[in-house]
Length: 211
Ligand SMILES: [Cu+2]
Image (tube, rainbow, N blue to C red):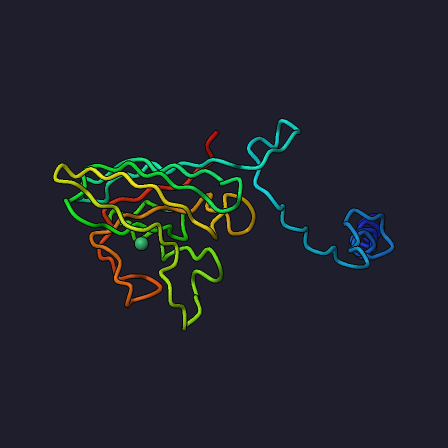
């Protein structure tokens, strides 16, 4: 009987002891296993000024060429290649070779998202503005944003075009890399900036880094 009482007392005494130990481990005086916050949060890292061709090689280079391979949207046949080259004097030279187009004039634009995953090409979003916000362009804008001009397809549906974009770049925050090109059903309507109301989307291609 005496032994049983002692055991019971020991159990009762041990319980608070265990619970005290647990409290001590989570108290500030316990050995530190959690990082203490730094006095001042670090400023956000500055954005890299140029995209790199091969950062793993240790000698970063700036991007000077890019390419978009365009595939038709659902029910369309337009496809082809658009090459981009950073011009020595600034801006970007663009060379387009497209086929499978309905004969006639078709506007083509840089769109803000490099996403051609939807069947109608609308996943590419709105036009990419080389000089300001794409999503919220100025309300008094007079030009068609992201405009590459127009492709004039012959009777066989082929079109070739060369253009120069003064404001565009393959480098820096307004880089075209990772955006997309959309070819439209119709030509641009200059009276409807900044989109140009060129109708449905015939083909879409993402702009990627090239050598
Ligand atoms: Cu467009």
